[in-house]
Image (cartoon, one colour):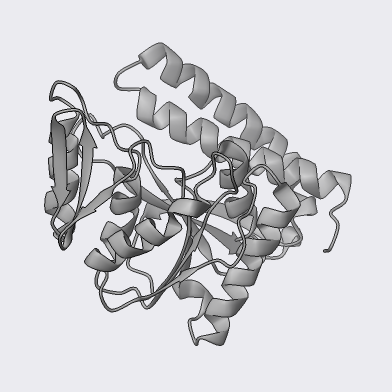
Length: 267
């Protein structure tokens, strides 16, 4: 694998930190103004640092955030389920004590039912609800999905067959592929190599870079950084589902991040 020099690593990590700071600040400003202002100030400071490191990006010009649009190819980092789903007849069920939600195959309806279950006693807070949200912008457009899991003893790989079946109940026209090996989400190099392998396989299946998306909602922070870095050398984008709802709409926004490129001489 190609190694990066110190300066590009600084620039890449500063860029990711800048995105995270602005994202946290923007989300927190309404509910926690002081926290939001602190993170926004941090974002501006990091942006100034990033400007001075700009030549290290090898032509990177702009990081652009926008609401996610439909894509044909999706790479998902799947986290270990907080509650293991159980199959009952043709439907999957998620249960915490007496609180139970049946996954009916209606994506928006099931997301809403899971949201309501958070307020029932005992509360059902299922982290794969974010996985369902990550699918929603692409429900009618997806052709190929790669799902990547982490290894035993507590990893998500052993639950990928369940994840595949659940995803397939919503996205019936897509080919869902389980990545061949479990990957430690904290192993930066191997995870980056695996994501790049998935990107290359999607290309071979005829999906263009602009139609390839990496969902970085699942997994740890390291996995999110790796997913973001994997998009820097191509027109591939990455997606993140917010963990708290928009205070104005009550909806969980789904953001896509693009890297626009231009000669650094013109920056």
